[in-house]
Structures are given as structure tokens and as C-alpha cells.
Image (cartoon, rainbow, N blue to C red; front, side, top):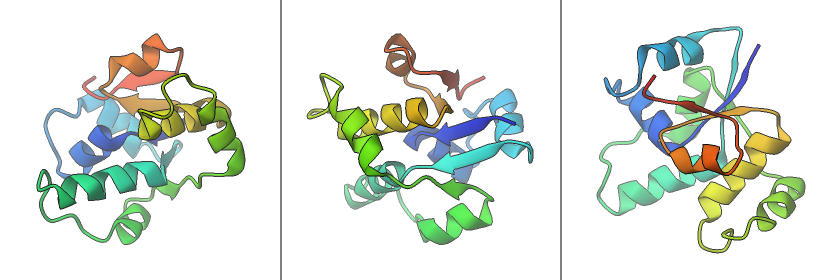
Length: 128
């Protein structure tokens, strides 16, 4: 069993059935033996993108997470304390929290952002 966290791009591609989400990634997310988590910062970033007009027609996120069989990964004080330790945490709060959650939860972050891996975070390229 793998513990996976979807970043904003990966979740958006999953929700829109975008062909950019690779077949291996789809299989990984669909595998019922794996636990797939969604962070509140991912939901927040999606909603901000919707407010800015970059995304149209998002459904109710809480309901959608449940329908997809994903799990919400709460942000706790430990995550925030861990995230605050990153040098760029003030300028990139979404990234910092996802990094902290991925590391502290022993998970793999499904993402297209190669910067996470460069910072030592366990990642899976969503395009695979």
C-alpha cells in the first residue's frame, strides 16, 4: 500500500480526465490498495484559481473528495511547524505545507513540479 498526496495540478487533471495525467499515474491513483490524500491547501489553491478565472465549474470539493474515494489530510500544528522550517515558506506556503505533509506522513507527492524532488521530497511525476 502506498500513501499518495495529489498536488493541485494532479488533482485538476484527475478531475477533468486530462490526457496529460499519465497512464501509470492513473493506475496508481485508481489502485484500491493505495491511500490517496488531498490536502486542504490543494483545495484552497484550486478555489483561488477558480476565483481568478483560471478554472471553471469546480464541484463541491468536500463531496468530490469523498466520491472519488480520496481522503482529506488535515493540516496540524506539526505540519505547520515543519513547513515553517523551509527557507522559502513565507513565499510559497502551499508548496511548504505539501512538502511538510509528504515528509511527515511518509507519503509520495504526485506532481508535475520537479522542484519538489530537487528539495528531497519523494515524488511521482504525474505525467508518467
